[in-house]
Amino acid sequence: MYYKEVNIEKRGEMTAFLKKHLKYHTANSWNNSTSYANNIKLYNIDKPPDISDDIWWQMFELAQWQEKLSDLLEEFGRRHNWLWQAGINGRSGGYIILYRGGIRESGYKSYCTHCGQKNYQVAAEGQVGICGRCEAKARVNFKQTHMQVFTWSGREIDMCENFRNWSLTELRERVELVQNFDKLSDEIAAKYISLCRNYRITEEEILVPKTIKVLEPIGG
Ligand SMILES: [Zn+2]
Image (cartoon, rainbow, N blue to C red; front, side, top):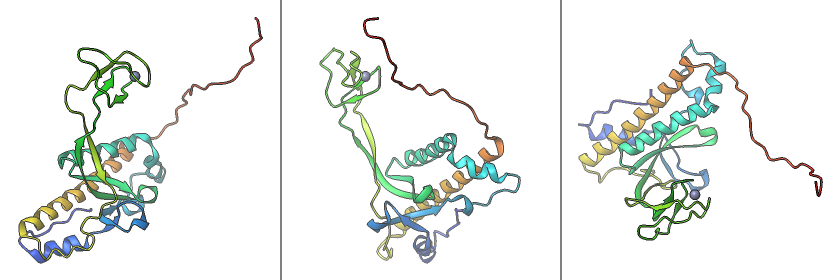
């Protein structure tokens, strides 16, 4: 369990919780900035005895798990209006990190209804533009200003903070945020365990279309 109770009536307890919380590099180790983190490496999570080793170590690489994981991370960002986001960092994705971010205008004015390509140009009033990628005459303007989520992925959070000048309200907000982040880490572990418990991995052959060179007689 990552989540811990904290007494929000006690300044010392809140400060100790924030200062002692695991922190990890937000980007590469050489940029030397860290933020709140949890170690979600598989060996750090208690594997329930009814789950086999095989599935425990293989599930991690499956696309279905990666999708579930990104859904959970996205949900956290959305709940915090993208001002706070959770992401994965570390070799083999072993750490979940708390990031700052936000949402801003992307600058895109139109998009192709055929292939989805976005474009900075406005399609002329009442007209459909040509798509720069697939060349379909299908480029239309966005009805609302197109927004984009951004992440300050290198920025440190409370790395050397001593919290001395923080008000109680500020401290409580930060504790609550980090607790939510810890709850997310618990949800991720629980989701992983439930996937391992309810599915088995089977192999499936897929056909991959491939372009090959062939000889064709000249003149037929
Ligand atoms: Zn297109």
